[in-house]
Length: 331
Image (cartoon, rainbow, N blue to C red; front, side, top):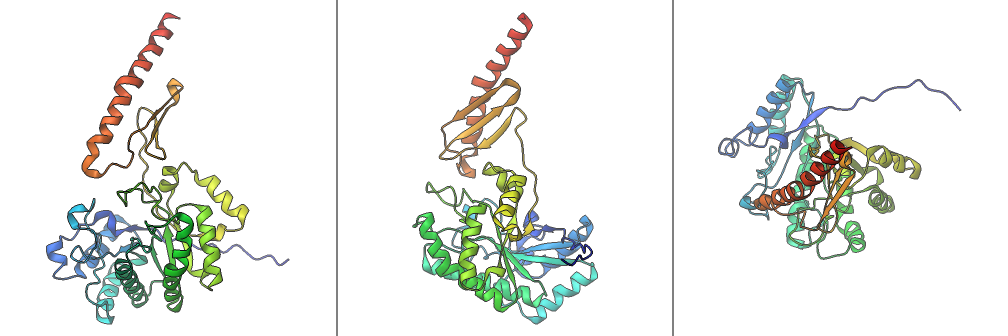
């Protein structure tokens, strides 16, 4: 077996422009859509980044979700209301060159399996425009979700993926692009009981989806944009997850990473449970507390979650800690 010297392939380290969505105020960027990209490029260089992940989204006036219902401002740094043509690409490339910056991929994070055919078609058309923009900018990948058809079971969604999502991958293949799927389960995406609203949320489904892709010759277009914080949300650890992929022969699926902070409760390790539960683990007290209250209350009902935290702390953790302290003192 021939031995070759190790040739490292360096990862593109950058920042997602959705992280600061109002860097350019909307009243300015709506009039001059590419100004937002230019200002983000300059800001990324100030941060010391070498790349940006360029965020795209349906404009608030075009989205199926009203702007007032959004938890965050719409992250359409890349505004695609009008065609992104060669002149627009030339302007963006000039800004990239001036600041010695690159674009790792274009990110459009939406539900590609929406149950409403009209809305789904609008989202697909927008993703295709994002892919075309990527080609004009010399970018080799887009990033987004698969999503979920809320009217169907998880198994039925595999057929939805085959019918609706595979054509997007064929479109990407024609343009020599990769579609990297972020694995966030998107639990707050619906008012219904579904917790996993992006079916590509875990390695088991990644493998199942990739096998479907292989049937249609688009296996190389389907990759995962892995975010460790989402794995923590689902009770997984990265080392075991990567080992599972390696053991199954699918370690090649990881094509990119999102990295962000994961907040740990100062009074114990707090983890989301399933089916409307909170699980609080307090190692110092050898204590586990489970509450059966909604864990997916909307942002407008943030006080609901704070009330749950307060009840657990005030009525359980503090008394138990006090009793433990008294017992230690007596001994």
